[in-house]
Length: 231
Image (cartoon, rainbow, N blue to C red):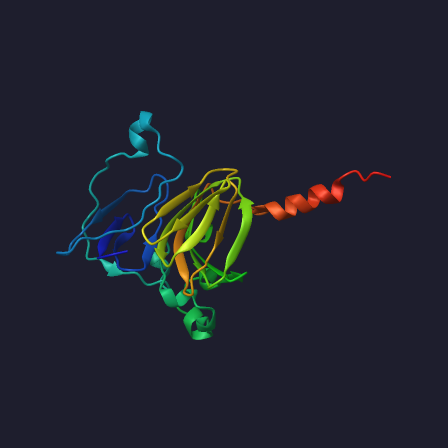
């Protein structure tokens, strides 16, 4: 999110800059160091919740060699645990073949619906097994109706403003705000502003292959469709 950080792993030293991201697998030694004169800031997620009785699931290990770091190259399989995202990657009209060619996989493909654009970042394709992280962008009047999940979600607002509802309570979220939806929390979003709104979203555990979203209107329809009709 700001500055540069070196991430040392057993496979090498990686220089992460604005827009870069990565995942560290369970039990994989890693270290982070700031080799610049400026602060570095990033968003981080741990899943599942670390256990306090075993040192927060974090153990010191022998130091990794401090090798010369290399910038992230998403086309290089040696940096297969890392990726990069730019605001332009969220624009539908910029998803041309020459832009898609600079990614190691179909993570560049966008999911677009109801004025909403979603781009996966950290998922099983990148090597994660316990969580996902992705970017969400709402166009003006973009809306996601009331729904819930069988997993937890967090939202870090980056740009714009969004109206949200969590279990019937309204909220207005602005850049820097963080929101959380627990399992079964019915939530909804809409963008009332003339500009776009963008946030970083995480999920834990990873969503199932089917029935990831449970939209309230679909269950209300099913209840009506299966109701016993009076003769």
